[in-house]
Image 1 (tube, rainbow, N blue to C red):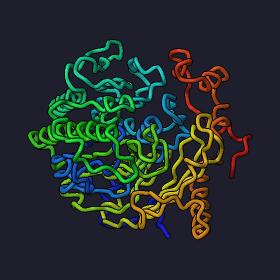
Image 2: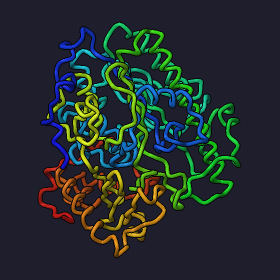
Image 3: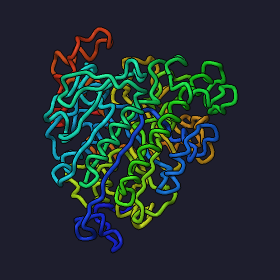
Length: 501
């Protein structure tokens, strides 16, 4: 049985819960870097022989490489909401892309860091400010504690030097980067490090690539010198995808974008070392969710339980504190905030729904982490479960945009015997008892978050009537800026609604 992480104590792990000043006059800095739409298998250090990521591969040798980091709701806004609040989307309202996360619902990640004297820097994609994506975020509660340097573009899919842009510090003026977007954002982050090297700081760098801007190969653009490194005909494709020229060109662009991120990551690590900050900085690299790259013929990239969609890389380095190794610990999106605060010796807010895995990391006791992670994506009406061995999900109702949800969302894979999830065992009579067992465990975990199995249309009833009506329209027909008025889905309003369980 999994131990209760909140009550687990070990002498070596005390630095995860006691004030940092007990152990050192200097608190650790935090550098949190995350890409967008990058599956775990798209790094050399995870066994990909084709993608060129020398700096991240080197970094992986210096820290912990996690084999099972899971995006619990594998789309952009829900991930960011969970990362920065530590709370389930039913509490913050960030249930789907382009719905604002409710401010003031407990103490959020950046608010804790700010209130303990950290200088905060955020650069890159934000995607927490509603559906009118081309606008800045004014200073105030909708920055969720990032009250210092805040240079974002909310959400855009143009990364080239001629069009890529960000908003000024006051959120009022749109400015061009004048370079490949990740390179320019990384230079902003390096400048932040230079300015705050003598002060405890927490830096979040959110790259938008390798997210595509269309499903065509041209939608996977990248710098020419990175594209030139890849011959589409020599790339080894995932066995879950059809081998076509279109797919090969998509892989070329996707990998080339990742190589550009690897280059920029190297610059960032060089800057930390040049300023003598390597030893006292916790550095994290991960991604918000995966990219299926047309596996199973799926054109929407993400939003499914398959591990190409929900399993992401996670690398954490803290020299002298975390021994370099490979970890089989299961860690989900909700666990990131409490675990990093635990490592930093800062208090974990009671509102956090995840686990503080810092003691388990510091003592290298991977089995002290939970043995299963619940999955959910509300607009598509499915729920699921991820364990070290199995992937399971089930459709609870028909989504508005798919005529046969069971064919897509009813899945059971045994990754021990089927590592690429090619054989769906959901309807196998031999695996009926296993399916029942996984379903019961899934329901148990979802109930712990207050999820009764509500459908998307039930959840939409929590929105204002006008907003609900607009959300049911096709995106192109929705009034400009309407999502900005939504302020989250209050769980208590669902008290009278029956769910599936």
